Length: 445
Image (cartoon, rainbow, N blue to C red; front, side):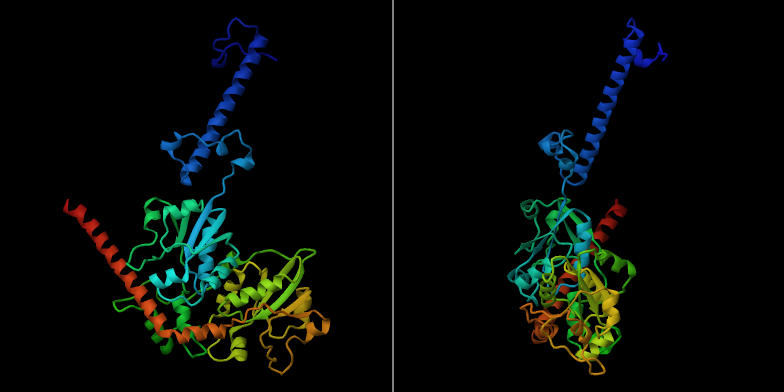
């Protein structure tokens, strides 16, 4: 091989045998390459640390910690991003689940703080569910990795640091203390706050309004005069309308279902378990039932059959279901025990359904099994096959009991929401005044 005798790479090597000079040149090139690669690697890791809020030039002088040093293996260099969310999570619905789904997507480990009954009563008003019920509901959401019971109502840097969280995530609405302060003021100021999109068309206010109605078409007829009256009482303060506490219509999309669905097919060795029902206002009673069903097999694959709205109204009557089929679908899909949902499942669990999904076990809770339209037993086929099982979860909570709680405390809930909205409107007006002042200042200058 011919060895070139000129070039910048040979500076300082004149007078050396050509073959040795070639070897020394290659060695120098390799060292230069490794040095550049190391610098590039350090730069990108430092950039990631700055982006995640973990680079402090004053304290570390820009140096990487031992955990982040290039000498560590790839598995040790990977940093787990811990995300914090907090809230009341009263009457947990798919809006809460969607917030937690978005928050989890911003990091690796999601920590959720849940406030106590005392804190909620102080700042907002009485909760519908007890703190123990709310803790268990949040644990059942499949994007949650860890929960903190009795989290403070105001989120501070101390809270984030105590639980080793990088930042907190909240929806693009505002949460206020009893004296009208933003509960995320401190973490926003220190740039440890991230925002996610609020789910339109659902709120606790809206659901309470639906429960106070006695019309069968409340979730399909937003122009109903009774609905408007209750929505006005619950979601409108004396001085206007808040964009966060008001009532809006939910529009289902295929993309939203895909985001909530697990996308996992049953595998060989899985026990396919089928359960059916309305699963209206998905609550802690449903969670306890599904958790008990989940424990019926070593590798359960639970399919939930949801009945259409008209079918639910046929066998439950009154103003049921409170949530329409699309809303109930998302609520059930968010549960960590559920693998698949059949939207608009037939009331009778027949041969075709069992064969199609290759069902190994059919479960039903302790609630009454009402006959089909032709007065036949909807579970006749699984009973005939010997795969039907009654499940006692030990929790007697039903949607009827929740509605009763709301009706008994109607005035308190109306007052709570009016008070909440009045504070929100005051903040909106203050922000508008501040923006107006900032715009007029440059013009005056």
